Length: 365
Image (cartoon, rainbow, N blue to C red; front, side, top):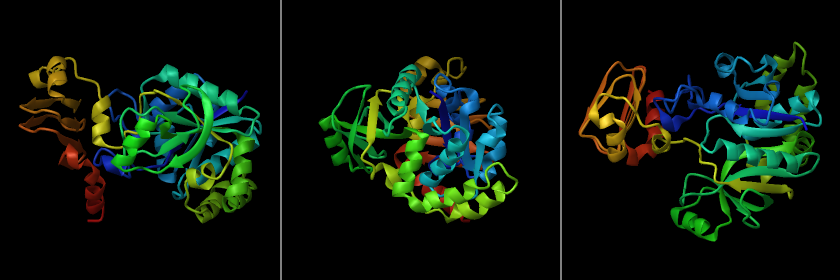
């Protein structure tokens, strides 16, 4: 069984401004202060199930050089540049049309570049089971996450039955719910967070895109005629933007009858907001300032990334300022203090959903 992994790395992570910007979005930064970027952690996570030469990255034209720098072992011809974002369906189609030409019987895993998985061994086991289920079959398997709370920021997958760590049929995909609905999902026990990770045989997904998204298939067929020639870049630049802007969920997953899910407790997060980052940041061990030391940090629930961050009388705060020489914060409770370059954000964590709005106003002058 030949496995290929496609990493989607074109987003801009606008809810994490100023750390994540259009010039350097979250997948390419060390968001958790662990010495690795999110896309580097993503590659590491899939190494147990995929050979290095079979990794692909689909990203914006403007990020190709960043990908080459952070992932120098990825073959240059496996770094696919989108001329403009068209959502996940065209992105996935582009990669799978390329893979089909190179390895027509391959099994493919598609994953975002910017998520976190804590239970890496369990994750590898889940992906192996999904690959076994799709090998030579018509099945499409999506990875579900056992919910730990009634989350309103994620989409859900409703399964026919609840079998922990096993492949089961999907009844329905659900959009991001209200809090009341999310609580009902948790109580029902057969709803899982949608991690946006998909597993299929390349023949299967191409057939499904042809059936349910023929306009995208038509564009990919035209682009494919230029694969491996000097015309490929220009052809892609001209034709790719003519694809409809649509997610793979709407284009295929909600229409196909052969969708399955395998769900487990993976310690997964899309790290889409500061509160999510705070939850997974390591506790500083040797900081000389008492409020940041490991014992006090547990008690006061402060998390920091930076060379010299000094907290005094703070509780429940996240300070991310790796560019700053020294940061002193006093008397704040449940605040985000984030600095990147010349940009600074100081915001209550309770208002973190407004960060995207704040950054948009900034970018628009």
